[in-house]
Image (cartoon, rainbow, N blue to C red; front, side, top):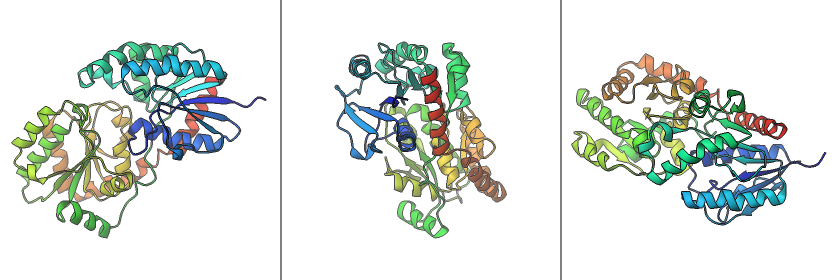
Length: 379
């Protein structure tokens, strides 16, 4: 039997700059390429690549011009550069971890569409990006031979929005990296000394963007501190500022306890894992998620989670987190108070969270994704 040849869109494998989709690509491709040494993988980059992403001898790195970092160049890269390479090399499969397809190619395609948040919150996406997504994502979903996504919620959302047949979509789930593990009480004290003058802290991890709803988390934290001044909690915010954050400064300036907030910016992965593990609890009140990795990272560390009751999050977190309406500041405030005043609930969430996190692993995700690849090739 001829050796299988698979081309992979790896343009989001970026050293020190990877976001959620990049991490998904890294963890799954690392496992898949090493588990299948008899398959020839061509990794398609849009700029010079880091050698750490060439996971095994059966991976051939290819750089295709131009660097695809905005909609005009996305079109050029996928419809000309990628399409030409796919046609020239006769691949059995094109795997695209960010969901973008090459519409002018007839190579069997597996598109991984993590979510369609832009359909629900179009005003929270840059205008040109929103136009591109609105026009092309439905075409990508129709063109793809198969689709993979990261939750049953996202699968149902794609079916509802685009009329895609449910049996065309495979759920592969997401996971937390193994580096997210509990730390000792002594390590927690050391982290608190380093970042919060020895005080316990709540933590938020993610981009600072309206869809992530940091403003309501800050308002709830301020309301909790006003109602419970003896609770000497601080609030660490870990993540890079996105766009549309002008209102956030006004909210912060209006807060009584604004000096108890620490903005740390983006952190290296090893330090991020320690910061989460050292937290009193994670706040993650996003308005919409296809999966929502930070709650699972915190649970894996034995850290209780307060999160949203919307989109995929109830499916992913189950009863191992406190779920509240992210639009209701009072509900978030009450959830913080519930944790602070009820040690039994706090301890129960610690234990349930660890068990819930065990349901998700990158090994399982990679196996599911490979099975989806094989379905696509057999089509």
